[in-house]
Image (tube, rainbow, N blue to C red; front, side, top):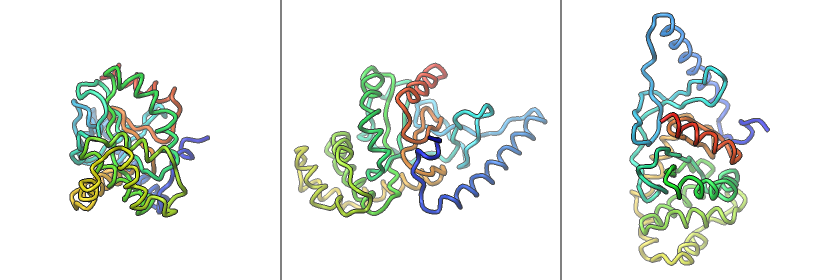
Length: 252
């Protein structure tokens, strides 16, 4: 299966692709001129890794050998540490842009992520950072808000895992208030506080800022990852993730 087939396209993706292609051609032209004049393009990779710096654009420049591109873009919005998993001093940061209705995100969460946690998070090599990209619909945003409400009680990751444990058809109405409260209840959350936090406009604003950041980077679907600033798209195999993490670990 081609890589693009493993990423869920967003509505209007064709228009985005055309715009992105034009921007990429422009970026390549700038790079070519810089190469002829001995200069270099002042772009920097996007990541929340400790050594990261941020550039002003939202384009992706292809790797010259045809490998995974490095994403360049604006500084990300401040991320809640409750949505991190692993040591702050880990040499590799893996940022996931995910949607709680996305079947490929669910596959990654159930099939690949547990092993990556065991190998790399538990050993201090990787810090996972969650970034909301609820592009599928209102239920995606509702679930993202609920997960952030759980985060305020220190239970984001158990709530994340519970949302992905049972996946329903997209926008089918299953991710309603009763279902989201039911997860909170099973996890032992204070339901009154959970409900109040879901109504807090600051929580909704956080979710929407994260989505805006993903859109500014030109992320075409979910799941999408930044591994120390280098992009990896789709529900890839464990072997692919291991190779990308090891490369980032050595190249730091």
